[in-house]
Image (cartoon, rainbow, N blue to C red; front, side, top):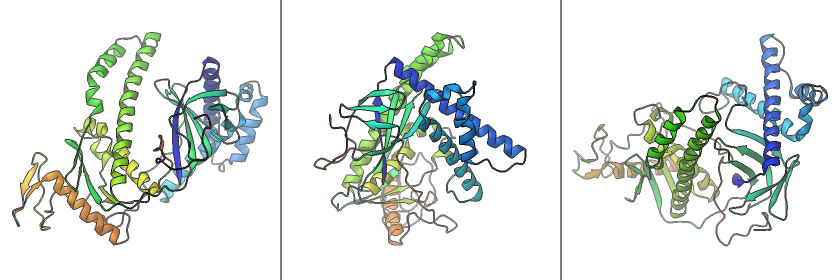
Length: 414
C-alpha cells in the first residue's frame, strides 16, 4: 500500500527563489499545454497527444526567447506537470463516461500565479536523500528537513509544497507492507455528532475539541485588521499571511487530534463501523461552521486507511439507515425524532435510550450484518450496494511505525 509522509522544510533565500521559479515554470507548462488542447477542441481537431505537447511546449520552447527561462529548472518538474495534466484529463473523461465513482469531475482549469498554494512534483530521478539528513532537489540544492520520524521505505516520488501561510513542506510517497496488529476482542460502531464528536457503541464519548471555535476570537481580530488594509498594499499582504497562519494552526491541531483519536480506535478494536454522512450537504446548512470544524470526512478517511494498514475490518453504514429511529434492544422502529430530543423511551419494550449511544449500537449491528453479507457497505434505499472507493496515498503525514518495528530505510542521521 502507498502512504504519504509530510515534513516541514526550511529553505534559505536562494532556495526559495529557485523553488518560486520552479513553481512558475510548472504552472506555465500546464497552462500552455491546456491552452493547446482547448484550442484544438474548439477548432474540431483531434486530441493533442502528450508527446507532441512535450516536444512543442518543453523541448522547443526552451530554445525560444520568450520561454528560454524554462531551462533554469529541472526537466523532471516540467514533465511531471504535463503528466499531472494528463491525469486531470483522464479523471474528467472517466467521470463523464461513468467509469469514475464519486462526484463528477470537471475539466482542468488554468492555474494562476496569484494562488497562495503552489507545488511541484518530482520522481526519484530529481531528488535524493543524503546521509547528513538533507534532501537534494535538482536545480534547488540541499534542503534542511525537520525529520519528525523515519521513512519506513525508500520514497518513490516527492512533492514540494508552499502553503498559503508561506510554509514549505516535502511530501514523500512510500510503498510499504501492511503492519498487522495483534487481534483484538472488541469491535465498535461509531456515531459522529456535534455535541460529542463521536460516541462508541460501548458507551464511550469523545468530546469535540472545537478548534475553530476556540480560535474564533483571534481570527475575528486578524480578519478585521485585514479588511482595513488597502488592496494591493504590502500591509495587506502581511495581514493576509497572519490570517493564513492562524488558520494553519487550527488545521494542524485538528489533524493531529484526528490522528491520535483514529489510531487509538483502530488499535483497540478489531472491526470499526461508521455511518456514511453527507458532509458536503451538511456543509451547506446553518450548522456548516460546526460541521467543518469537526472534520468528519478527514477522520473517517484516517480510520479507513489505518484499518487497511493494520489489518482491521472497516465498513460504512449507508446514510439512509435509520440508526436514530430503531431501538437497539428490541429492534422496534419508533419513527424520526427532532435533534433536541437526546433521550427517548422505546414504545415497544420501554427501554430508555441515549440518542447517540443507541445510534452507535445500531451502527455496530448493521455493520456486522454488512460484513457478514460480504459487502464493503450497506445497501442504499433502492437496494444498490455502495462500493468503497480505492484508498490513495494520504495527503498528509501518515502514522508512525509501532515501537519495535524494524525500518531499514530512512534517514541515517536520525
